[in-house]
Amino acid sequence: MICYLIRHGKDDETVRGGWSKLGLTAEGKLQAKNLADYINKNNDELKIEKLYSSDLPRAAETAMPISTALNLEVVLMPEFRETNNGIFAGMPNDIANENYPGVYWRALEWEEAYPQGESPRAFYKRIKTAWEAFSEAIIKDGRNTALVTHNGVIHVIITLIENREYSNKMKMESVAHATMVPLEYNRLLWKSSRSPHFVPHGDF
Image (cartoon, rainbow, N blue to C red; front, side):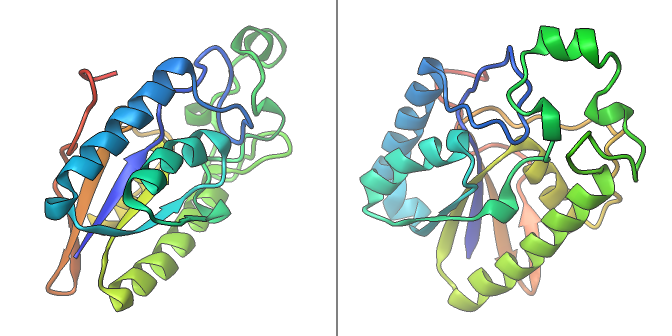
């Protein structure tokens, strides 16, 4: 069986993301539509039968065209949200840089939380717990699954299945917007192809 991890479409890069309630840009909506068209056209091969998504708007908006194309319900999963960046969620970058200089994800210590948000340790623990429960459930179900989520979440999941140490200070391999990363479950192990399945109109 295969679980396709999907990064949401493009959002507003002039603001801080995290738990931002902002949705997709016009470009992001087009990316989501193109991805849904691709999945619909190729689902005889992909065989996606279950669809899940983070409940943040940019992820849910990416999942909706897929839901429509495949006639699948989207199950929203708040536990697969991006890092809780507290007061920074949706804050314009220029205001954040002026009022909170140097406060970035990679600058935080392991136990140091964003103001009113999560620490790297808390984020990692949340995603690890969520992935272990989710993985157990979809393995038991046995059907190919898609999970629309966020770059940071995908990064944690990849480190977990590859049994690598996670740190917020390591350089993160970015997944292009509206791209699928297939994870295959075989012989009691998950394996990542480490290469995207679909990138609409080039690598955004």
